[in-house]
Every structure is written in structure tokens, then in C-alpha cells.
Image: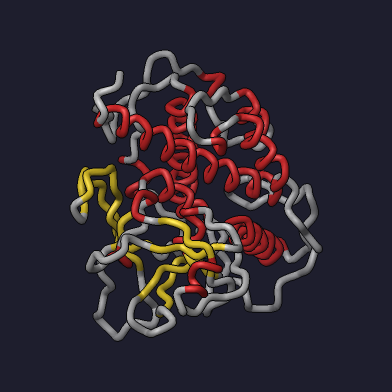
Length: 324
């Protein structure tokens, strides 16, 4: 059985590490990764490498942020420790996908890791939640619009996607609650530091739902909107949604759009702190990362999350079928 917090396999070496220094390219690490998980073309090394190459150069126009529109963030020691915890988790995740580590990455550090102004109030690692035995991080997310003293119920996440969520908060991005179209449920969305700017639905980011599909949670299960774990999410073609007489947009935004938005927030934060236009040589004070490196990091984190999910899912199915 796969442990949720096992120690790294001894076969892991320093050359497999993801360094905090920008000089060590995540792209080169990914190109060296030999993923051997069958039955899912997304995990083929060539396809994944192409994906990372495609997003590695973020769009940038050098614009300065509006005055007072970007809260200044101090990247102190806890922030640097949170960054290191995320990188360490990704390093372990890559080793697990490559078969150089027998157990899932140790999520104990990312449970408590937080960047300044994080919207994640508390988190806890559990082995089972809502009837699904699956490594899970249950987290409480701040709702700035909630009545005083009211706290939203816990939401449930895969650890491998939770680390990507943490990284998306580096530059002031936050997770907020948005009402469903019929005002019945509160869904988590990714937005800027103030208001609803961005407002990318987290389910679409995690499930990597394409523009021509909608994301649905576990059907017919009470409280399904609390669950953001990948096994509980699925795609439904928009044509099918329309055929069922339900409302849907003609086209919805995809994961890449949310990543690019996070990079724009990152650029704004650098500009707000320096008072200068952002260039390709600009780096975030305290973390020493450029916008391009940050964009590459987010793409890599989501690739690792997808790969860990697929491998763990397939291993679980094999064990259930009695296969070696």
C-alpha cells in the first residue's frame, strides 16, 4: 500500500533535485524525466515537455501597476521556508513519477506552508474523507465576504494539487468563494488580491478542463461541492450540457489562462516593490525568481500534480484488480 508520508527512496539523488536557484531549469529536468505510466497519453514525456516549453515564456507588456492597486508583500523567512517546502514536495513528486521513489511525496511540510496574505486559514492531512479513502488535505479557506464570525466548511484537496495552489498565492493571488449560478453553493475560485479580478474556478484548474467542456463534481452526492479531489471531478461536453437544457458558456477559460493571470500578479508585485518597469531580468525580492521562472515553475507543478495523480490512480486500480 502506498503511504501518504513515506520517506524518500534512497535511489533519489541530488541531480534529480529541483533547485531554488533559477539557474537550474525545470524544463531540462522535465525533459530528462522518463515517465512510464501506460494508458494515459498526457503522461508521455514528449507531450509533457512540449506543454512546458509552450508556457515557458509568459506574455509581458512591461506595464506598471496602478498606484495602490497592488498590496506590497514582504517575503520573509516563513515565506522562503514555504517556497522551499513546495520545491521539496515537487522534487519528491518527480522522483515518485519516475519510479525512483516508492511512496507518495511527504505532504507534512506543505500542510503548514503559507505565503504572506494566504487565504488558506488551516489545513490538515487525512487518509480518508467523505467516504473516499484517498490521501487528502482538508482545508479551511477564508471568505472575506462572509458575515462576521462565519467560517466556510472545509474543502478537500489532493496534496499534489494543493502544492500548486500554494504557489499560485505567492504574489498575492488568493482563493475566494463564488456563488453558483443558482446561488445554491459556494465554489472556490482563484482571484487577485482585491475583489473578483481573475475569478478562475478552481475545479477547472485542477481537472484541467478544456474550453469546450464543463467540470462536474460527484453527481448525486450531498455536499459534493466541498470536494476538489481529482477523482471526484469529471468533464462534460458543453454540447451535452446544452442538450440537457442546462445553461453554459459558449467557451470557458482553461488552466493556462489562470497560470498566465498568476504570472501577471507576480509581475505587478515586482513592479510595485521596485517602482520600475519589469524586465526579463527582474526578480522578486526575497525569493530571487524572475517572472519567466515563476511561469515555468507553475507549469511544472501542475504537470507533476497530473502525473502523480495518474500514477497513484493506476496503482490503486492494479492493486484492486490483484495485479502486481
